[in-house]
Image 1 (tube, rainbow, N blue to C red):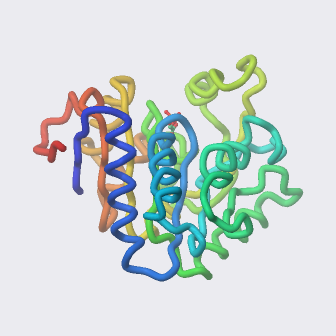
Image 2 (spheres, rainbow, N blue to C red):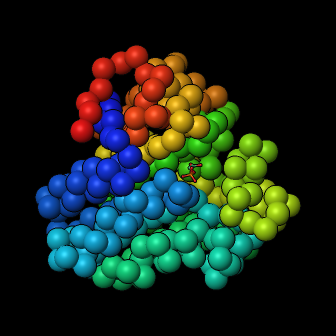
Image 3 (cartoon, protein in one colour):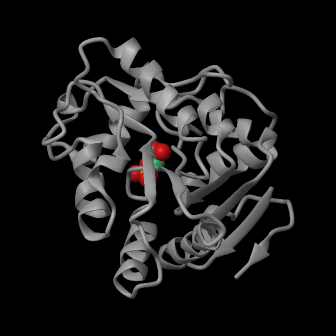
Length: 248
Ligand code: PGA
């Protein structure tokens, strides 16, 4: 695993954009796995800047988002579809029909999860998966205890995650208690993965993921088995690591 330590959130976004842009140059069409939350915002800002500068073309990019709340309409301002439109898709030359977010309103959730996996497989898999990490080590909404081989499915959120996400809602009771999430196994199928993390509140989770045992209690630790994963993390987030790492 490659660990790159950067000084701040802005550098984190730029470095991750560099890694992805380099890979995009090798292909005529490109499939990205995308994440929501506060962490990837600096990456999406950098994508938008590069697109406006003519350095990054999204016209042949297809995206699959990691997760979506169950029960929120796409137009709800806390849905992840809304987040992606607001923070990336509406500002770059991507074709909306090539952007995929799990359907939190599906009548048959199991069938729609299977269909999501099938779409990813049929397009040839994800070229670059972007991940954040929860304070509890989750990736996507794969909470501690998730099967390390899991595929896209419905998950019940832990109280810790509901509390962490309550900051985006008027009150904690408004946070949906379930979500559809790509599985850990889905992430393991991606050709390359970049995990972003910033802030001292993520230092324990990053330490457990990188230097702890592979165990479902820390879902991100499964990435130790991935063939190509890069962590791009800020200094405060790397504070507890004992392994050598690159600094930029
Ligand atoms: P955050 O969430 O980027 O808002 O910190 C990350 C996560 O919970 O995976």
